[in-house]
Amino acid sequence: MAKKVFITGANKGIGKQVAYQMGKNGWTVLIGARDESRGLAAVDELKAEGIDAVYVNIDLQHPETISSAVSVIKSQHSDLAMLINNAAIPGDMRKPGYEFTLDELREVMETNVFGTFDLTQQLLPVLEKNNGRILNVSIPIGMSDFFNPFAYKMSKAALNTITQSLAQNFSQAAKPIEIFAIMPGGTTTDLNGNMTGDFMKTAPEAGKLIADIIFDGQNHNSEIINFNGKVADYNNGLF
Image 1 (cartoon, rainbow, N blue to C red):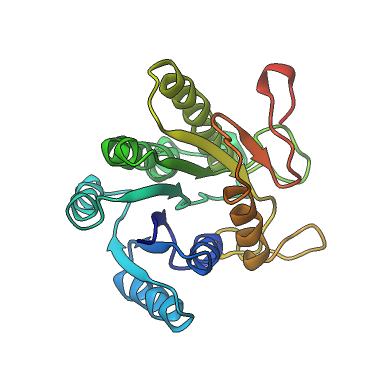
Image 2: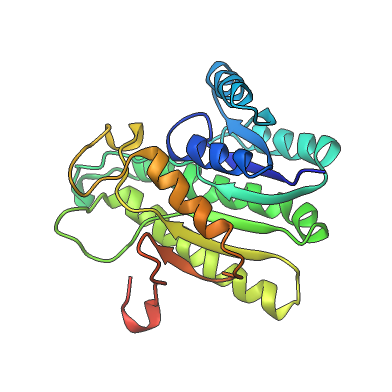
């Protein structure tokens, strides 16, 4: 029986390309998306490539859809072996931090942190039963003259903390769950307005990079892995 993975925000961009890569490696991919038409369209495209794909409605801004998605997974896909938290919203990536309103920050944090944590927490019993893995798609949070999106970076800093703290919790409790994060680097997607440049990857390139790490046979629990393979070490200032 094929292993199953649930990927949020998988109807386009990096999430869709990770779904493609995992599907080509024989996994059944559950496509999490808030827009049903786009989610179903992605499923159809993946199926045309010979990939077993299923649409699951979820909007991380709305807790009731998270609970509904978890209910679907528990009843129909209880053999889920991996959760990939990919869905995120950017906020205004050009606005200085001191200009953000609390409501603007709350919106970004609701999706990228609170909704993501809620989903992860609710799926822990399923993943624990199946010796599962959790992957958080993240970004570097160190200072950069070229990339300083306040709300987005703030949310990903929290996600990186969730990754490492839960990894420690899982290890201390001897839970058979692995959690780690991958920072694929600059990628041309809708999230950043399809920004291009010599330093940017395409979504297929980022999807393959992530899949290569997933399938490298290593245990990456607690690691936050940069696109170049280096692991962030926040205790020593390496982001």
